[in-house]
Image 1 (cartoon, rainbow, N blue to C red):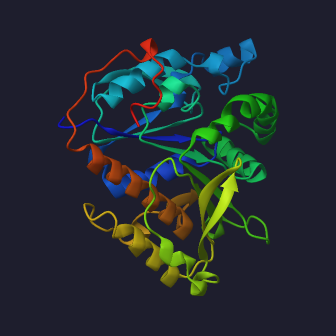
Image 2 (image 1 turned 90 degrees about the vertical axis):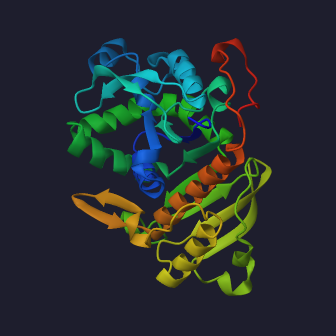
Length: 325
């Protein structure tokens, strides 16, 4: 490998949309260039053991986070790992998988930003922050159709997990470069295709020039860029309405594409896909979110392309949280 991989971290609670977001990123970058790692594979206990012990997978003690830290360091330096595998369909562990990092590594899961050691190895960090009532609805649909749970079991598990979600999952939002919040309009949740998105763009990474969105004629176009505060600190906020017109969506898409000339533009309907029941549908806010994240990955790829590969240093022997980013 000529240069180290670029590592993207995506964190959010269960059924927040991590896999859906990742799917479009892989399409944009090309599957042959992307390695995908799920932090859920590092669960210490299987489903039956968790029930017996009274622990949830959201708790750090339920996961081999020290092993994950070491694996994340190896991936950062372009080295292979022997990754554990957790099968969500059966709730059991399967045979470990040999993983060689490609140009881009997408790491998604519940506790990916939990420690300072983890956070130093990401180039871009994204947190998914949907409204809690909508996430619960998504989780019920997913777990009853794909994971063999009943509605009653999912609701009981949500209540059991809430203390750990508040203590360990939601605080990771503070470490993200981009906070993604899909949410319904005033009419309430109808379907995923009409969800709005609010992107908090923190100044921890440089964002593309979208200053044209400050023009007065953009106020009613369904795409807005404003200055706001998050946790008391100034941030840019990019809002895209679920009913944004194809014309205005295409204009924003073009503004982002022009910043990533090394990637051949894909048609708008080639990404931004999600599954609702048995149907594959398209969302412009989702597609534009994926495109913005890809911009950051390619920009970082360009930044490090001329740098020599550094020698790995044991992750647990230091806490230099600023060096890798």
